[in-house]
Amino acid sequence: MTARTYGQFCGLARALEIIGERWSLLMIRDLLLGPKRFDELQQGLPKIPTSILSTRLNELERHGVVQRRVLSQLDAGVVYELTEYGNDLDQIVLQLGLWGARSLTEPAADDLFTLDAAILSLYTTFQPDAARGVRRAFELRYGDQMIVHAVVEDGAITAGEGTHPDPDLVIEPRGPVMLKLLNGELDATSALTCGAVAIKGDPAMLDLFTRLFHIPSAPSKVEGLLTH
Image 1 (cartoon, rainbow, N blue to C red):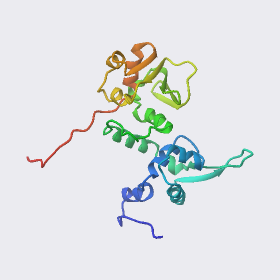
Image 2 (tube, rainbow, N blue to C red; image 1 turned 120 degrees about the vertical axis):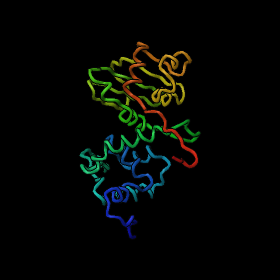
Image 3 (cartoon, rainbow, N blue to C red; image 1 turned 90 degrees about the horizontal axis):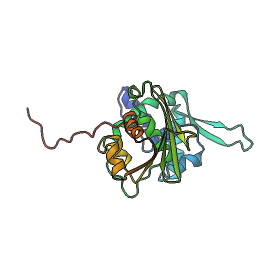
Image 4 (tube, rainbow, N blue to C red; image 1 turned 45 degrees about the horizontal axis):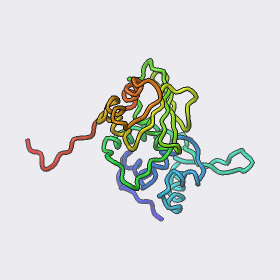
């Protein structure tokens, strides 16, 4: 089958030809957190048809973005991982995610918030300048089934799955409130007062959290034709 092109000698056009197909960027998003088996990718993207997942992986492998590796364990399973070229998309994906987060509103009834998305959201919204000199650990509990943590070390962040052995603050959102907390629509004090968030730790730490992890305000919408 002939590959679709934009017919333009342009780096952006070429990038879109490589990673612009439906699902491709979400697959790259999940692989930024580390190698995954085929079924693990399916678990993180449950709405993708198996045939499309296979096709996209083959396309990304052909373009040098993804590679397959046989594990050294006894089961000799195969994982997919980003190449050096693929890992160069790290900051691009995070910045694109932050850009898109500005347009997020209330989730639809069938929208999924996956573990990988929860972890990546911490990297996406992290504010290095606000974190200079800060050394804190946070734990977020989205119910009993999904727990993530973030460790802030003087302008740097490490985030991952599971609990933290000694968090400075444990945050338990009640419903999809984190978006409002991070974009400033809801401040820390109000979130605690109305019960939108439960915490374990110093309440002042929640205000610090909203300064360390932040989404810029939503874009203003312009309707009609502008005239000058």
